[in-house]
Structures are given as C-alpha cells and as structure tokens.
Length: 238
Length: 238
DNA sequence: CGTCTAGTTGATTCGCCTCAAGTGTTGTGG
DNA sequence: CCACAACACTTGAGGCGAATCAACTAGACG
Image (tube, rainbow over all chains, first blue to last red):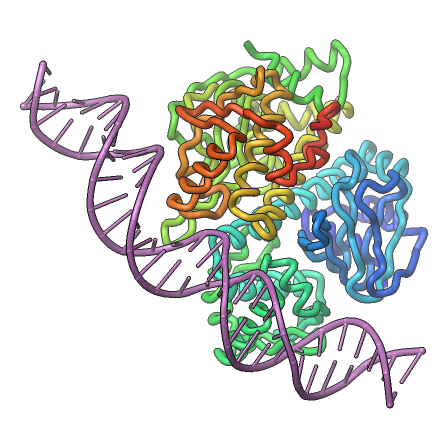
C-alpha cells in the first residue's frame, strides 16, 4: 500500500532501516483525487509537496490557443511537484485515473533533506532522472517519426512500470486515451490513431482499454530506437 | 574574471560573504577548450565536475543514424555536468566557442553541499531551472511552428544572457550556425535558413556572424509566444 | 433515449523534408 | 600570392509526413 515512496526512492540510492523509517514517516496526509482532477496547478501556492502513491497522472502545459502539451507521465512512487520545493511550479499535473496522494509538509521534507544526506541524494538523483526523461522526449520530438515516438514511449512506460512492480508478462496499465498520446508526442489525434494501427498491424503491441501489451519487445525496441540507459534504472538492460 | 559562478548561483538564491567565499574557492583547476571540443562526454568517467566560466557550449545527443539533437545551450556561469554528480552523464557537451572551464573535484562539492545548505539549495534550484528550460523546449517542439520556435529560442537566449550581464542594447553574442539551430529545434538546415529569412523580413531580428540583435522585442515575443516565467529569473518580466 | 467522449475513416492541404546545385568566406599549403 | 578545400549559407524543385476538415460508429452515462 505505501512503501511506494521508499521503494521508488530506493531505485535511486539505497538507505538503511532508520532512514527508511524517516522517509516512511513523511507519508501522511493522504488524499484521494478522481480521474481528471488536477493534483497540482501551475503557479499555485507553495503548499505541501505531493507524492503519488497510487494511480497515474501527467504533467502538462496549456497554450494560449487552448492546445495542450503533455510533459511527462507520473506513476506510483513519483514525486509530483519537487520543483515547487525550490521554485514555483511552471506546469500543472492532472490525474489519469483515481489517485492516492500523500501531502508532505515542506518543512518536514526540508528537515529530512538536511538531516539525512542519503535521502537528499536519492531525491536529487530522482529529480535528475526525471530531467533525463524529459531530454529523451526532446530527442524524440526533434528527430523521431510518429511511429518511432509512440514505440519509444511504450518502451519507456513499460520499463518504468516494471521498475515499480506494475508490469507483468509484458502487460501493464497505461490508462491514456489517444488524445493524451497525441498531446504527449506532438501529434494530431488522427495521425496518432493511424500510427497506432500500424503498430498493431506490425504485431508490436496491443493497446486497448488502458492496457498496454507488448507483443514483440525486440521489434518495439528497434522501432523506437530505444536505449533504456537514460532511465537510470538499475538492471534495466532492455 | 571569475565571480561568474557566484553571480550565476546568486540568481537562484542569495548567500552571504563566507558562503560566497566558499563557492569561489571551488573555482580552481582552470582549463581551456577550443571551439568544437567536447567539454564532457556521454557515459564518460565520473571525473571532476565542470563549470563554464567563459564562452558558450551546448548539450547534445547523437542518434545511431548520425543525426544530432541539441538539448540546450550553456552560457557563462552554468554548471556543465551537475548530472554526473549523482548519475552517469547521458549526453555530451561541446564548446561553441573557445571556453574557459573550472574543474571542481567531486568531493569538495559534496562537502560544500553538506556543510552549506544555502549553496546546496541554490545548486538544486539551478538544476530545476535547467529542467524547466528543457520542458519549455519540449512544448516548442510539440506545438510550435518553425517560425515560433526560432523566435522563442532567441527570446530565451537574449534574456538568459542578459541575466549574466552579457546582453546590452538588445545585442548579444550567440555564436551558433544555422546547423546548430536546426539540430536544436528539430528542423532541417534548409528550412531553418528560410525561416530565419522570414524573421529578418519581418524586422524582428538581425542575426549574423554569431551576433543576435533583437530589433522588435514585442514582435519577437509575440511570434514565439514567449513567457519568461519558466526561466525563473528574478525580475525578468519580458 | 439523447448526449458525450473515444475511436475510426476518407479526402484534402500544407509545413517541412530531401535532393541538388550554387555562392561566399575562410583558412591553408604550395 | 594564389589554388583549393572546407564550411556556412542560399536557392529551387519536388515529395512525403502529418495536419486539418468532415463524417460516422460505438460504447458510457444520466
């Protein structure tokens, strides 16, 4: 239920019993959100930090003309708005499914960071890994085709979900609509639809009702030119 | 010559005399690089951290087919490879001009982070601001036209250079070729060329021999749909 | 049942890419 | 001091990938 945060941070640096207990102690102030709700809002007040314990969500920015760009997907264990610990949040976060979120008072996190360097380092590492994912998306947007971008994203989500124990037998929950995919990958909804069909025809994936099934991992990996190094997950050698 | 690092970090959190002295003490091991040299290499050994004191550089990744994606530009005061403090570097950094770089032993930086929280926070803030810039690029790649993307980048560089005192009267050094711009913005060289011409015809900018002159700031800002909030620079209200 | 959203399909248009060739400038060695 | 690379930039022509416009289907929900 809620060693989620610990398990997630342990991916970025092991720490011992008492340290883990201190991290676990942060997980209070549980709050539930419904699918579609905003978990945090751009420019919002510097309220308590949020950790996603259950469910999935996404970061996004709205453009003046009403279009949306999705900046990343969040899975259980991810810190939602670490940025707002030090800066104002420059994007919003919305729930993809019903979500359980822990609200951590800023002061307590700051104390923990100062008193427990291993935890501070794990947090910092996690935020750097997050930035690495964004850079990888940038590479995709700049230089990969629609087909490659979708394949790459599916590889990424599959491995990330596996790293927190939410992928089995090449199946995982990825409850996005084709519109979400379009806004994440910089494509039109129509083209996303057609490209998904191509991926299906090529027998690389099955994707329906929010479940992603990878049918041909080597094929998908090749299609997306996917190299998991940027995820900085231990033991993720595709 | 070299309060560059201090001045740069002060943008992300003020600190006092002794703290500044401690930061300044980091600036040792000066090394010069020529234009075109790599300042740091993807996957390279976890050697000393590098700070760019003079000159400009860019982060990039090469794709298997030889194409290049530029992930960001570095200006004086920027930390080149903070990522390698906690993770292996997943991209390379190359010099745009001759560069002066300070090599900071990892251990000394780690000590400073532990002993001087204000400096640690400024560093963290700086790395979060860097991530914010990458996200903004992602928005541009996903949802902005070639014309808008170039305009946006010029706005960004203009303000960033101003924030470190390297822009005056709407002029700044931005020594990139059209090929660099193309690889940064995900465009072909041909299209970059034509789009630059359009920006010139519209009297928004002059851009030649590595110097950028903004002729019509409101116009450029509108063309790029530029909102400086994401830069997290104090007092940058366009 | 009517409405809303998600997904699908076809036709058309357009932004940007690729290919191809040329100019201008710089630097280098004979 | 000139020939000649090498590179940045420019221009034209043609083609493709993806956007847009416009329906239409199917399931979910009140």
